[in-house]
Image (tube, rainbow, N blue to C red; front, side, top):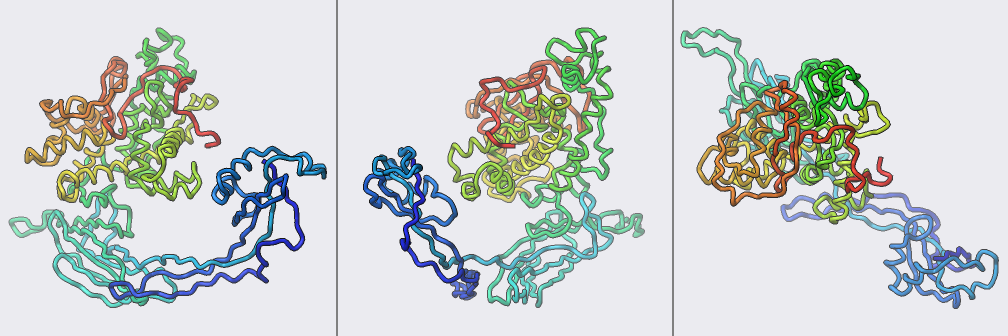
Length: 625
């Protein structure tokens, strides 16, 4: 391909404008079917257009004209979009013309060249949507802080109109509290919260703007339940009266809600969450001192622990530490398993995903060793797989919008995950798994700790994606809001099952429970898991301490049965973390598959530093950090 920039006097496609116009906005709202004005405006946007010609070296004839709106040479796809196929083929195949560099006769050169033909300054009218009004939700008279959410008296629900347009304002807020309508003039509406039942009270609300339109209709679920023995039979109050208050709404502007409660419209139990769903106030409350035989083994193998005086160098045949190796690794093993606690607690407070749950899962998945394992493509403290990456990118659009531009140009990411090509999806999944892979041959102990910390953020976003997916599955099965069909704790147990064995297993079991007219809780849903899916039962028991349901395997023929990956070195914590023997951690066990699903729960299966094999398809994206 040859390019010649030869100026021709007086030759231009347009006459340049005297100056660039000033950016201006002309607001010309048109009536909507409801009678209010459309939130649109027309912007006069300036731009410079550059004209290029594709000329023949031999005849100097113009074979094609094209226009671009950027400095520099046209891109190949721009030439292709303006020129016919023959001209573009000539352009792509033309070699440089030596005569053009030396001042010789260019007619001896074959093919075509690009010639800059001129530029002009213009404006175009662009119609853009203006941001609509919204309404934020808070409470006054009580500081709602999870998990307590205790108030000494019934608080007030405060609805605040938010008008993003300058020179406009919210003039009224309307809605219903339960079945009672309300109307408030001005941008703030205060509603006393009455006592409610355990399912709470529904609130619908919207705002009118001086612009002439209204916001969309928003909803909230409000619950206020008395707490304490202030209704004693003898008439004497033994406890100070207080109220347990919850608000669930997409418009909530207060302290973070209990994780996934807004997704499910589900209130946490009034008695507070179980231990595995808590986030402590202090980082030292997350600290553990567990005998982790695999972690001790890799620390010994990487020379971080000297176990030379132990039998077999402190290891059993499979690469797990023996009792002597475990004892020698003690202090460093304890320090290693707690070095991520500060990050876990910070991510928990940012996302609402319970800190104790994350630490329990990290123990179950990787024993806090965030490398990548040769028997299965998994990486990070939570052992993210390609299927798990897909769930995260599909069901967590906010995370997709943050991560995708790190890999692709914005115009590709703007398509959204569902409209990406299969190639783009595979590259993006691979990039995410690669990004959380903390294996690092040049780092102390072979682990890139900052990257391991990053994997905690990704893991929390992955759990939130699984929350979204489970909410949709429950609705598909029951045609009810998840919070109505089941309870907050059970929905979290479903989320762990979804993360472990995938939506195929979970949806089938839920369908079986509903068909049998059984409650939609983990004991009943878990009892309908088929043989290929029962790995979720010990997994959930290990992570949460919730006892395994009695499993019926009568419908195995109807169950999805994908290939089962090899998992070794199982270890089972109780409600927090529990010690296991080296034999238990080294014993091979057949774990659950991931039928069409998201993430398989695995544990390390190979000793030594887990570098990917040469034929691994999971490789870093070129140029990707």
